[in-house]
Length: 371
Ligand code: NCD
Image 1 (cartoon, rainbow, N blue to C red):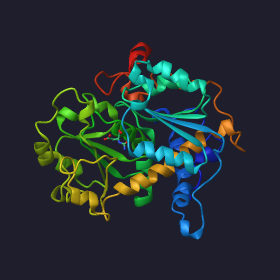
Image 2 (tube, rainbow, N blue to C red):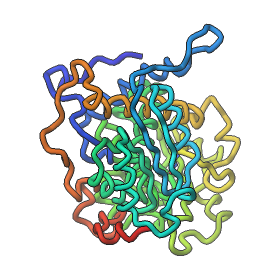
Image 3 (cartoon, rainbow, N blue to C red):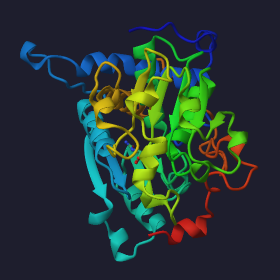
């Protein structure tokens, strides 16, 4: 699927003038679209049948070292970044928290300086604290990709969601997208609010009152606490897991009760548009936020397609972020400032003022002590 360049890019705007990909709040709509457009070629590339002798291997990142530093558990995101890097020819190294000196008491910043001393060309970071990835990025000399920080942002997840929607529905603009469940603790929801909102979708947040940020009204989404109302006429329904590891108390009476009122069932889904697309970033908890039969119904569920799009989107991001370093042909110079994003820019602009939504970017001291 090819898309004509956005008019802003056709008129000379830089397609992606950033050193890092830390979040989506700092991006212009055409920069987001540029990454989606770039990902299309990798979707086709990844589908190459191996019996025709076509290797799924491209050498553009040959000789570059990519470190995936994951300070929080992950299955699909880590694997996806690893496969993406390898398919582009990078030397990929994974650092998991259980195997790192973080467990021996080293501060996060010391770990960052250690990684930097090994001259990586690209670092992909996941961390449990909101703002931690930006803090590390400021200490590194290479592009940094945020693979999820606390409840703050998960930019490549939102990009892969958008790519899935665009390919299935042919557009994003004008669609009604209901994001349902544990919005309060979700970096996926936050990044999707930014991305889908910027690309013209009508975005809804559907959750029990306890799982909605207190100043949700400032997020530019329509808010529902009744699931049937929130699903009414929706073109896309995106379900979220109860992220209990990020909870500091009981937010729902029980998972049974939660499923009764907020689980995605056949009956509930009838309120949505007849051709509704069901999505979930995974990992899924069947019988808690979603009925397993809906998740498995490939006519409506895009769950495995999301995983597929994830590899393509990450290949696009790895390629684009290393273009300057590789001296890629026809790639314009980046913005002059090395730190193009200020300390608070990671937080969506609408969130910066209000207390209680997400978490403020932590102070360097707090993160420095984070283990
Ligand atoms: C999400 C995450 O880690 O934020 N998962 C993912 O990246 N595939 C959502 C979640 O953990 O529920």
